[in-house]
Length: 120
Image (cartoon, rainbow, N blue to C red; front, side, top):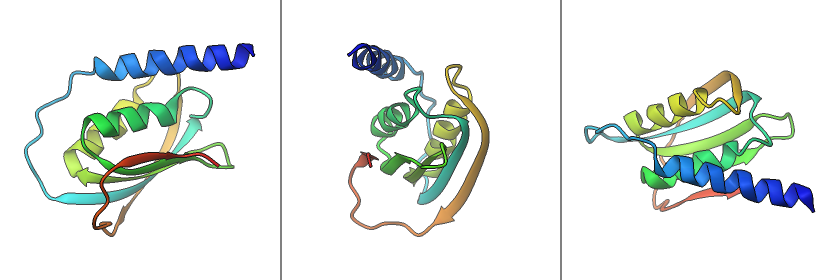
């Protein structure tokens, strides 16, 4: 019971934090898709929710999920500068500890219109 309470509290905090991020002005650019794996202390800290909230706010599409190896994986599609901003922001989180980031270019997914959290 207490775990659910603290998860709700954390999720509320994360959503509120994202609303107050000062976003840079991004010059319009072509759409790219990146596969990203975040390693370190990235699970049980609201990491997926934060990626989801930022992606929605920046009109990025794709998905994010926890991996069995305790890493977080995402495929993010949108303007390159926005994706780089999101990655750098996630690296700066104090409640998480990103030790490594693996980024690979991918093919664009046509017709994708939203960002989702995949829960297993």
